[in-house]
Amino acid sequence: MALLNYTTKIDADKTAGEIANMLRKAGAKAVLTEYDDEGEYVSSLSFKMKVGENDMSFKLPCDWKPVLEVLTNQGVSRSLLTREQAVRVSWRIVKNWIAAQLAIIETGMVKTEEVFLPYVIMANGNTLSENIKENPQILIS
Image 1 (cartoon, rainbow, N blue to C red):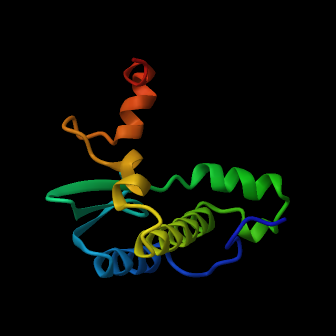
Image 2 (image 1 turned 180 degrees about the vertical axis):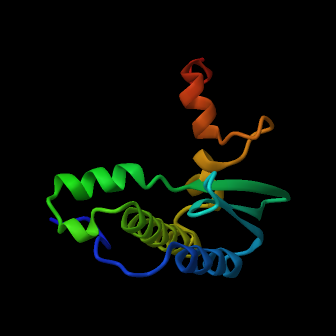
């Protein structure tokens, strides 16, 4: 089976805007778009949302490199084996994931913090998942 959205032509900036709009409709108070070091491609979206009585900030990463690897391994057309295409595809996948997560939040099946907890921004500026990756011992009691 081919990777989801592998033929998309939709620019990553447009997709990031669509995601920001979805988050806004779901209650986000702010959305920040971050770009790679060259300022060429969207690398992450951060957003602030009220969770209970607190404002919490989350950072949604999007790494295009493994997407390019999957496309290569699946043998897709050479014209689709570019960094630009991998960035477009990766952001469309994130958009689909966010839409699904917001739908289960809306139904009350889960709470916002249950879905986005790995991406909460901690006091050191890293996400919880980044902190765990750097120091897995924090999970051991």
